View 1 (cartoon, rainbow, N blue to C red):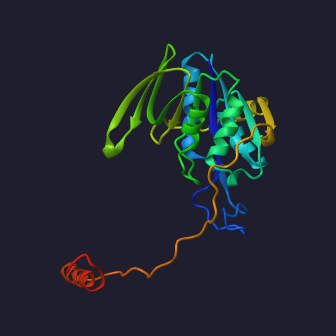
View 2: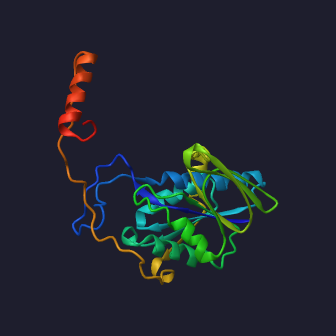
View 3: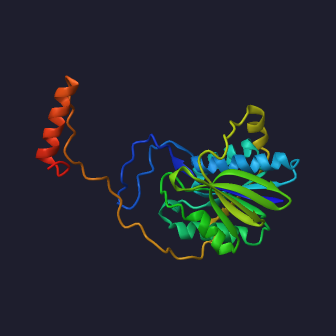
Length: 258
């Protein structure tokens, strides 16, 4: 079995974001970076499947971006992936989800991957479009937002998160692509021995120009912080008094109470 895991390196969500000089993305300078949380679940699930099947599956991890994404790829190798592919693109943040998916599909189309894992979405862009678009471009079955996963005899049984706290069970044959949701598993921390082993694993660098042929389907024209509105009102004192004051505010300043 051959498995591909697609990961993205994103800024830490605790970072202070600023719009860049051209106004179409955030300023990437002085930010701390980490692997996208949803992608970590994909890496962990691929490694668990590899262990379950007696280390028979071959797991490739792929990421698109500038030189710094090498750190995220090295972490995936230390978690248990067999080889890394870095699609080098210093301007990946400005590419549309369709272009990113096209690059992944162009790499994967002739590699014979039985199973592809992606995160449900990236935490910075949040489009949730890349995984499903890769599946469409490759013409394979796709199941999204998995919170439970099992694979046996070439058949995947998964549990999807639905609206209203409900779950849906899906079953489908390989080859397939799945996107991973919070709660699918608990990603492992790389151990020191595995970090050392990762340094000896195959690490391939591919220029994005060799894979990208698609024009963007959408373009980010402007990025901006929400307009600041008036500050909130803090009520203090006796509970009954605060309730009366709150009712008065709602009547005077809103249309909630008339």
